[in-house]
Structures are given as structure tokens and as C-alpha cells.
Image (cartoon, rainbow, N blue to C red; front, side, top):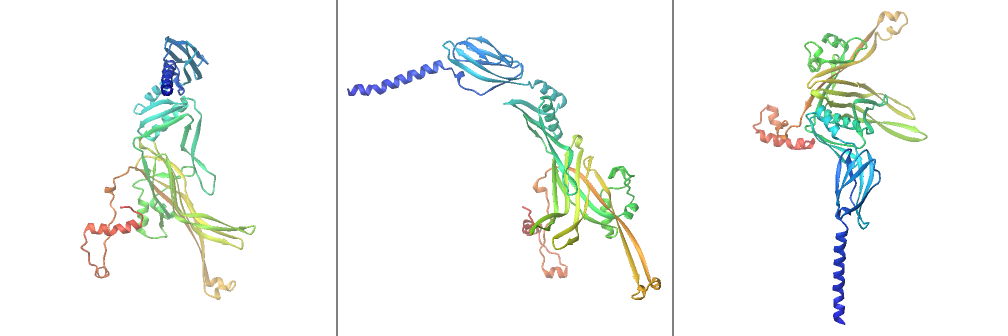
Length: 454
């Protein structure tokens, strides 16, 4: 009895192995559930099963059809856009294979057009699911956007326009047309730019007297023409001449430098910075005190895009604001700002400059000089006082220079050194014999405190 019980487990194990082998022979590997089969119009796929084929069923023959090649192979070919289902059955009615079939647009014609229009671009197109994926490398951002737009339009894909707008306090958002991007649904743009180009914009914002501009020989043309003036059109003039002359004269009545911001941005992106602060604006409504903050100072916002042949299209909005009068009462605290703002869009070559002007302001001043008491006597006092009126015109001049820049190695950057001196050395004007290495080490704590990482 004990021996029979010992044999039973082995008997069951043998039967389990036999059943497993039989199921492996009957069920082919092709019958396992697989993901959808994606085909382009005109493409063909061979499906191989592990047993003899008895019958084949396809749900929508107008999308895709089949042809039995031999007892264990079926040729499936795509006919038109759409989706269908395929099932292959064996002699005993068992299911040998089932596939979901989706037919997409052929990419061969699009690839040929890309080769003709962009011969230097190394771009690949592929169907991944319901999406068309673009991959490869191109030389510039304009080529990347052009290929993305061409593929999306040829595939008749819906798109969403991503826009950039200028936002300011005095008007609604204004769209910048050349910064618009098209995001096509079903098109994944993984194209990489070999060397992403960056644009550096250097501005010099100066307020000068109108008479100084006339003496200097700058004219902005008649009414109706653009306010921007390109430097190359002026005779014997460069972008730094106005700034150099104002700095050399050192007379605030002639002009003064308000700001000289410098900002870099990647092609196709926007950048902004503000050097200033925020002032609180307090209002009381229904016994509730509300505080809002308003920014002021030197602000620069720009959008740049590098076009073909390294031409740069630039849209910028510089602004200089300062505190002016302030209006207060029991319920409100309303500070006022004196703001100078400009906004323009230009296209120019690498290293070129342009001058933006035309923001003219006129100020009238009246003065009176008199002898005390006697000058106040009616009629007779007119002989003992004098009056005068002074009118001054100032204009905001913005000189901008754009350059294509590239990152540099950290070893090339040279920061100024710092030399420690004693009070006695400064009193007798004695130079220190400190080496350059010691001077650099002395400067490191100061740079670190200012945010520089050495």
C-alpha cells in the first residue's frame, strides 16, 4: 500500500509533462497575443504559424487583404488607410494567430521630397504607433522647423499654433509672428540641431538733447517711415559713437547714459531681465487693504531667431522707468512712474548695429526774477522784475548691436585680480610686490561673495 502511494505523485507528474508537451505542439508561438501590426499603403507582411492553416479571416478586406503562400505562411498586404483584424485558424478549428492591423500613409514620397528640399539634412521618418517620428540632425533651427511643417502639412495633420506675445501694462498682448511654432498632432519632432546658435544683444540707452542730435547729424527721416535707423546708412558713424561722445562730454544737459544692458538668448527663444525693484501700491476697498506691487527699473525683453545665412530676426522691448510723483489720500497710495519704452522688430546680419529713436519729450520751464516787495507792486513792479520761458527737448536713443555667440572654455575667461594693500602703502602710493597668483587667490573670496564660482 505504501509503495502504491509513493508511485502516485510520480504518475501525476508524468501526466502533467505529457499534457504540457501536447499543448506546446498544438498552440503555435504565433498564436500568442501580439501588439498591433502597423503597415504603410502598399507594404506587405509575412505571418508564419506553427501548424497547418485551414482558414483565414479578415474583418475589412478594403483596408488590407491576404494570400496564403503555403500551409504555414500568410502574406498580408495593406490597401488603404484604416484598421482591421486578421485571424488564422488550424485544421481542428484552433486559433493559430490573431493580429490587429493598422494601415498608415506611406512615408516614401515624403522622404523623397525632404531629400530634394533639404539635401544636407540627415533626417529619418518612421511610424511608431499612430505617430510619425522625425529623427536625425540638421544644421540650424530654421531647417528643423521647415521639415516639421512640411511633414505635418503633407500628412494633413491638425496643428496647434504656439505663439509668443509681448505683454505690457498699456496694451493687450501683441503676437510676434516670426516666433510662431506649429505643433502637429501625431508628429513627434525629435530632430536635433548640431550646434544651437545663440544671439547676444548689447543695448546702450541714452537720453540726449534734440539739439545735440541735430549737431551730430542724425536724422530719422520724414513722417511715415520706420523709426529704426540702420547704422550703415549713416556716414562715418558707428553704434558706439553716441555713447562715446556723451561719456566724453560728461554734461547731463547734453545727454546721459540711462542703461547699458547685455543679454544672450538661444535662437527661437525669448529672454528678459529686470534691474530695479518693486513699489507697493496700497488701496482700501470696503475697509479691506489691498497691496499690489509694480516693477520699475531697467528692463529688457527680447525674442530672437537665426535665419538662413546667419541673418538675425530680432524683436525687442527695452524699458527704463523711475519713480515720479506720488498721489496719496485717505484711501489710496498711488505712486507714479516715469517710463520710457520702445518696441521694434528688425532683421540684420551678424555683428551689425541699428539705432532706434523718435521717443521725443518736450518740457517747458518758466522763470521769474524780481526785487522783493517792489516787484510785487501792480503795474510799477513790472519795471523791477523779469520773466523767461525755456523749452527743452530730449530724445531717447537706443543703440543695439547683435552678434552670434558660442560657449567658450572656462580657462579662457579672465577675471580681474585683487591686490591687498595697507594704509601705509596707499598713503605713500607704494606698489605691492605681490605675485599674480597671490592676487588671484585674494580675489577668490570676493568673487565667491558676488556669485562667481571659481
